[in-house]
Length: 334
Image (cartoon, rainbow, N blue to C red; front, top):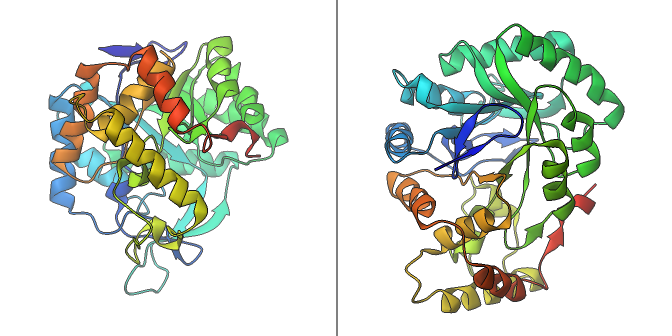
C-alpha cells in the first residue's frame, strides 16, 4: 500500500524509515547529536529488510554522521535503486577533520544556502548515495528567514530541470515558512514533527491546500513514547537525549500518559511503536511517518504497521484524550 507524495508522481510506502541513527556518533556545537554507536553491517541489513517488507522511502541528510548515513544507505540499496525513494537534505556545514580523535565528525552549526554550495553538496550526496538522482531534496534549515526562500527555490527548480533531483521540500515545523515552498512547481513535500504530544493542524491543512505529502519526523518521540525511559533514566553520554531531565514534571506527565496508552492497547496486538505509527496514518491520508531505526527487529516492527493500517476513529479520540494536556502546537514553535 502506497501514498502519493503530493503533486509529484512519486509513490511512497505508508511507512518510511528515518536514517538519522545510522550516522552514528557525531556532535553539533560540541554536544552529541546522535543516537550513539551504530553497527554498520546491522544498519545495512535493516535497510535491506525494510525493502523486502515493502518499505521504499528512506529519509537521511548529508549531516547525519557527516555523510555516513548517506553512504550506508547507498551501499544497502545497490542493485535496487529503482525500488527506492531517497529523501535527503542539505544546508548544514560539517567537518570530518575537527581534530577530536574520539569523534572527528562535527556539525559546525553553520548554514550555507548559496547556489554554489547547494550544487556542490547535492553532487556530494549523489556520490555518497551512489546514484545519479535524488527523489526528494529537502532544505534542512527549519528557521531560515522567509525572504531567503525564493533564491533557494530557484536553485532547486534548476536541479529538477537538470535531472539531478526529482522533487524538493522543506524540513520545518513552521507553516508560514512551508508556504514559501508550497506553491513551487516541483515542491512535493514538507517534513515536520507530529506524534502523540506534538500536533500541527495548520500544516496538515496546508498539505491539502497545496497538494503536498507530509514526511513525519520523530513519530516515536525518540523512544520516549514507547516506554523506553522513566523518571530515573539517563540516556547514554553519546545520545541526543542525554541532556534531558527525565525527572521533570513534563516528563512525569508523559510517562503517566504512556502507561495509560499501554493499558488501552494491552489486548490489541499492536506494539507501542505500531500504535504510534497507525495513529499517524489515521490522522491524515497524506502523511508518511519516518521512524528511526538501528536494528532489523525495529524495522520489522515498524513495517508491520503498514499491514495493521490506521487506528479507528474511536482509538484516535481515546489517544488524544490521554495526551491532551501534553499536546504542543508545533505551528507556533517559530
